[in-house]
Length: 300
Image (cartoon, rainbow, N blue to C red; front, side, top):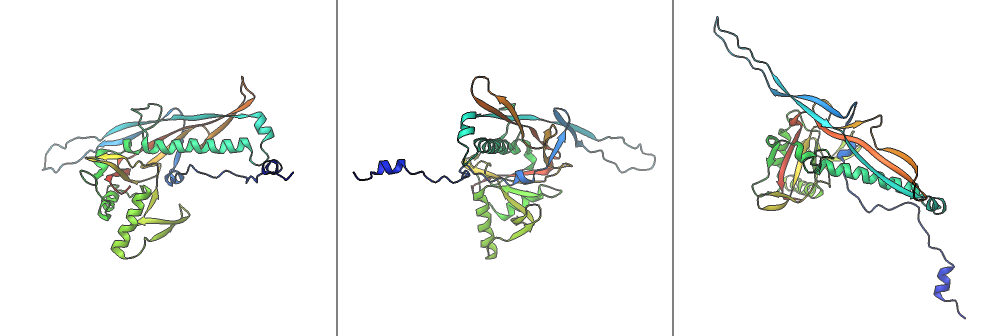
């Protein structure tokens, strides 16, 4: 009797390559450079200028007017971002020859927690979900929002110049979607006849595309389905000043700035170990002039 294929396959094992190939991929450079400040307590309170006291020109013997500046108290609350993962002890003990089941699951869980922070950074709305912090579209003020057109419009270099000017002390980064970056490259080619110029920036450690010296970073969590007049598929470009003094920054509670991993032990009703990942975190915007938005860009 000849050796049949079904019998041969029983005697052969497929080669399994160690490691997991990523298929859920989003690029978010902002997360790598966003500063974080540790706080004590459940909220971060700071004061913004509201009205500035002035002075008047006087004649001799005029009464000197009195006027004091006023301030606005702002509260940024810590939020809880957490999730559990159960690892079956039998699977961990018997099927970790190539890839450790617990290491693989923890790495994927940490990625999921980070992705949720990224999403909230761009889409968070505490009015819709009081458990999350407000993202950039909610934090940016109307006076800091520039329109690309009543019904949307294509990106121009003049729009980016106006956007950068809206951050008086200087933007640290311009943030946009992948398609918008492609449109910017095309603008540079059309105006200079060459490809986009890259600059080596120490804080990124690699060559970065820039506009007038301001690095451009990609954020694919920024939606491409924003409404602008009759247009329903537009996006936004943000100019951001990032620091703990007067800019945009993250906040965290507890002794760890990153994600905390807790082993909760054996699950009561099954033979599995439960691991919890949690992060007490939030977002604070010191000066409203540190974030500006170009809204209604059709290059998505």
